[in-house]
Image (cartoon, rainbow, N blue to C red; front, side):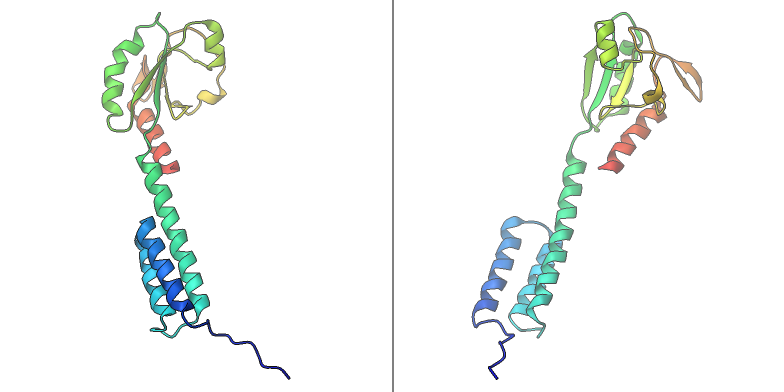
Length: 183
């Protein structure tokens, strides 16, 4: 019978792998989970904890996955929210509402003003009237997707306080909150 294959790593491989893992953590600046995984992995490879090499692989994968989640969340949170105010020139409500909207969404992102100039554009844009507020492309009115009365018209909103020429603040704030939670 032949000799059984060795299950230990060749001399020097442990140190090389430990150095690569530490370098990736330092250069990539991926975050604390990877740094902790690298330090533990380096200790394991160097034999200080006496654990097998496959444990390092599992640790590195777990640390890397944690770091990716942290990076994705940070990027999503730092990405500005797109707030649009769609209007048409024949309705004064958007002009009165714009300063209030700017204050309401302060710090969440820039407000993009979009003039709707024709009935065809109103249909294409699914424009329910002026002013229409959208956060990341979605109307702040939760039932707006089911409506079809598009056109160059002033829009009325019915909130807890009755009818108004602008959406209730809580609708806008809820839309911002949904966008942040989705990210």
